[in-house]
Amino acid sequence: MDAVRLVEDEVRAQVRRRIAAGSFRGEAAELRSLVDAVVLDYDLRSLDGSLPGLGDRDDAVREVVAAVSGFGPLQRYFDDPAVEEIWINEPGKVFVARAGVPELTTTILDEDTVAELVERMLATTGRRVDLSSPFVDASLPDGSRVHVVIPDVTRRHWAVNVRRFVARARRLEDLVELGSLTAPAARFLSAAVAAGLNLLVSGATQAGKTALLNCLLAAVPAHQRVITCEEVFELQLQNRDVVAMQCRQPNLEGRGEIPLRRLVKEALRMRPDRLVVGEVRQAESLDLLIALNSGLPGAATVHANSAADAVAKMCTLPLLAGENVTSGFVVPAVAASLDLVVHAELDVDGRRRVREVVAVTGRSEGGVVETADVFTTRAGELVRGSGWPPHRERFARAGFDLPALLGERP
Image (tube, rainbow, N blue to C red; front, side):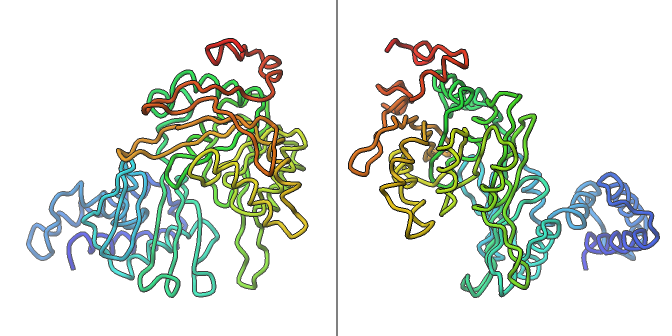
């Protein structure tokens, strides 16, 4: 057994004794102080050669703290602010992504370590993964989202994915500095949010939809109350008045599940000034449309390849709510409820960019919702399109000169 493992075992033993005596609160500084003391004591005792040498003391302290309170061999990636995502395909294949670019790490795990890490990740979430529930989605204390799939859904090994939310941008101005958005588009979108327009953020996986929605919602006036509904907590809003809700898995008896549709309905009873659905995937899109169509401003994200595809998808998803829901109802509802679609993409170089801002005019014909380009991408740059957003009176009421925002007169 190597020196670090011996120190780790001794620290765990001391933690157990202190917990039993009621003298351990579990604080990070308290654990770090204990590890420092144990490492120093071990280093002194190993001088006579009776114990394996410890090597660098600071490295040993970090490794033991990570093993006891963090995520062991993965903790270095959690501590690295450049790492956006961590995933395990099998114990010998651990990947990370930095700036949108994946790389295979040198970290080698074993089956038991992977299972132990997942157990530690889920310990504070109240969620589980087992043969009866082979999938799990949960939020870690630092806001990261973990998703786990186990055999026999996977072929052989546990598949673990951790999406970290590295806070590089909190406002639209931050996205401008990062090159993800142009200043004119940022000013327009900020005004659109403040004016109460309904926004749909679209894009593929890893396109930055959640981060973009976070930045958009930062423009919500401070006096307004925001209610968010998500499958798993991902949004990290800095608004003053926010209530965040997430879905709940069924218990071992198959009871107690709270789906996203239920959250949307409950949110309407909580005096919202803004309703936000983290991501629409299924029938909850119908409940969102009905809420938006009642005059309540809101926002959501959806997986789509373009703004046009996002609008088309919003015309299809509500049909999953039941046979009595028809396109004849849904398409006009989408046209009347959505105002703007903001589409983001992940470039080959790993940079996330807003590629188009599309206005929904409010009209539909032949089962197709009419749209217009407010901003579009030409020659790789986001530039002003020919379209105008709906509800111009709302901009005026909120104190914005819409033609000036768009750099022209109608």
